[in-house]
Image (cartoon, rainbow, N blue to C red; front, side, top):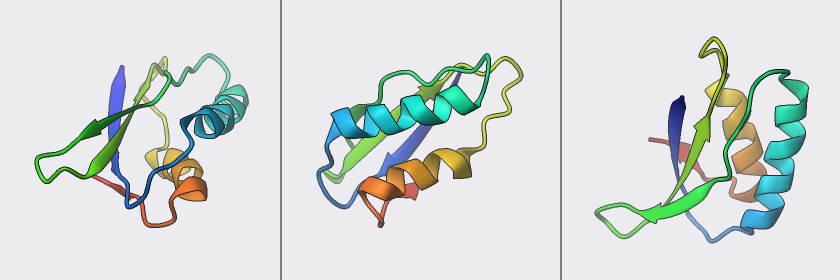
Length: 78
């Protein structure tokens, strides 16, 4: 399992994000993205945590970031 953290600059619709992640997961056979969750960092910023379960740990974090940035263009990987 791999966990990615993305710092958000705004509140996003998690249902729509999940739909987009599901569409991306469908393009990566045998790989799975868990439902994203939002947590707060020490500075009280929203951080979205996405967990992937790839068979060979070869998820492309940039590909996931593209999906997140559809919802928050200022999101960054942390």
